[in-house]
Length: 323
Image (cartoon, rainbow, N blue to C red; front, side, top):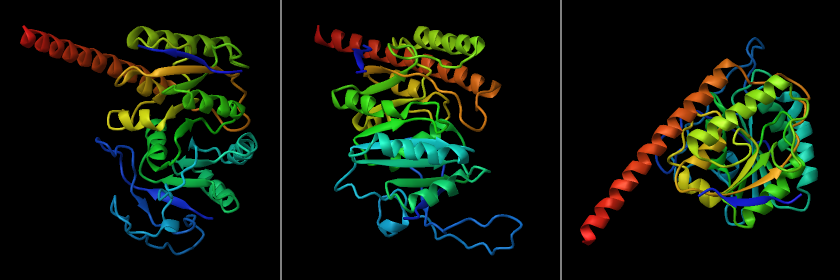
C-alpha cells in the first residue's frame, strides 16, 4: 500500500566514547580504532589498549579501521539504523529479513549498540563479516534510544535514513514504501499503526489506550497532525536530518517527535503497518520511559512557543521598519 502524503504546516565494530554535543556535528561520535573483540571478564584474556580516536574531519585512521568512515563517492540510497540493547536473539533474523526486503537496492545497515550485556554488538559484528553492508557501532559510555539514532545518522551515508527497532515488531517489508515516499518529496514518512492498513496486533487494551493517549497529547501540545506520533518506525530525508541535526534533543525517547516538531514544518507521509508480537527479549517500556516521553513533550512545546514568539516579534519589527 502506498504512502499517504500530507503537509503539516568485514569485521567493523567501532567503539563510541563521546557524548553528542550541540552544533552541526551533533550526534557524531568519535570512533576508536577497533580492537577486535572485547575480552570477557573472568576469562583471563589480556586487554589491549585501543588506539586514540581520530580527530574529527581528518584522515587519521585508514578507511577499513573506522566504522563511521564511509566511501561517500558512491553512497547507498538507504541507510537503515538499528539502535539495539539486548537484542542478540533478534538481530540476525532481522538482518536476514532486511536483506530479503532490500534485494537489488543499494543500502547499508548500521547497528548502534549500547554495549548490550547479551553482546548484541558481537553477534552483529560476526554477521557483518560476511555482509559488508552491515556496520556496527558499539557505545561504551552512552545510553539512550535517541542518542543512538543520532549516532547512527551521523555515521550514515544514505540519501534516505530509516529508523526501526530491532525486536522484530516493526514490519521491515514496509521499508521500500517509506523510502519511496521520501524520494517522492516527503521530509518524513512514518510507519503508522493508525493509518489505513495499520494495526496494533496483539497489544492489550491498556497498551492501546496508553499509545493513543500519548498520540493525543503530542497532537494537542505540538500541533503535529499525524495519526501515530508515537511511532518508532520512520524514514527521514538526509536534507531534513542535516537541517535539524544541531537542534535535536539526544535525550528524548520518541525521536520522531523531534523531526516533526523542531524547525520548519516538514512534509509528512504515512504508511500503515501492523505492529507485530515481540519474538524474543523483553519490552523497554516502563515508568521511566513514560516520564521521559512526557518531559520531551513539555520541552518541545515550550521551545516551540518561544520560537513562535521570536518569529512574531521579528515579523512585527520588519513591518514597523517598512512604514
